[in-house]
Amino acid sequence: MPIQNGHEIEQLSKVSYDLEEATRDARNSADIEVIKELQQQLREVQEQIQEARGKAINGSGTSTEPLFNAQLRVEECQHELKRVVTNLETFEDNVSP
Image 1 (cartoon, rainbow, N blue to C red):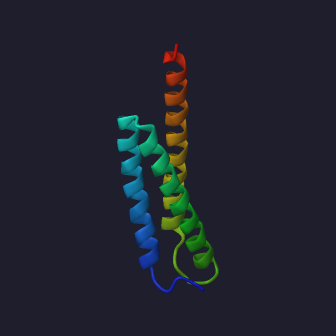
Image 2 (image 1 turned 90 degrees about the vertical axis):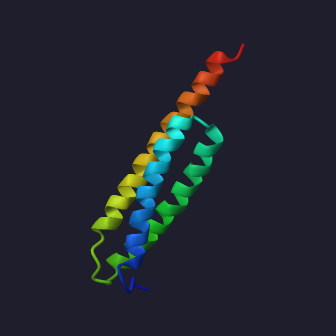
Image 3 (image 1 turned 120 degrees about the horizontal axis):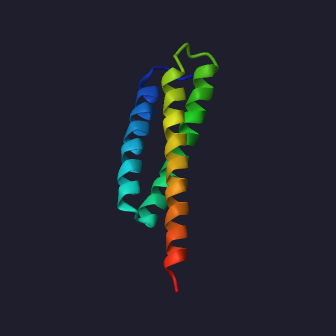
């Protein structure tokens, strides 16, 4: 079923910006539990974006560029958080006796 209007695209784009901001906050907090929760949210939103892109590609006539940009933001956030988790785990390993 194609997207009937741009509302879903707008919402996903907004969510991707919100998650980008949350990623910065999580990185600064260095709280591994918060980061892991945010990683789960990012995975869920990425699935929604991919589904919406599939709908838009299948003939809604709606531009998929905002979805593409949202997906790039989400993927970059995922990579950034993965690096943070790796660094935190390495730090913990080096601090342990």
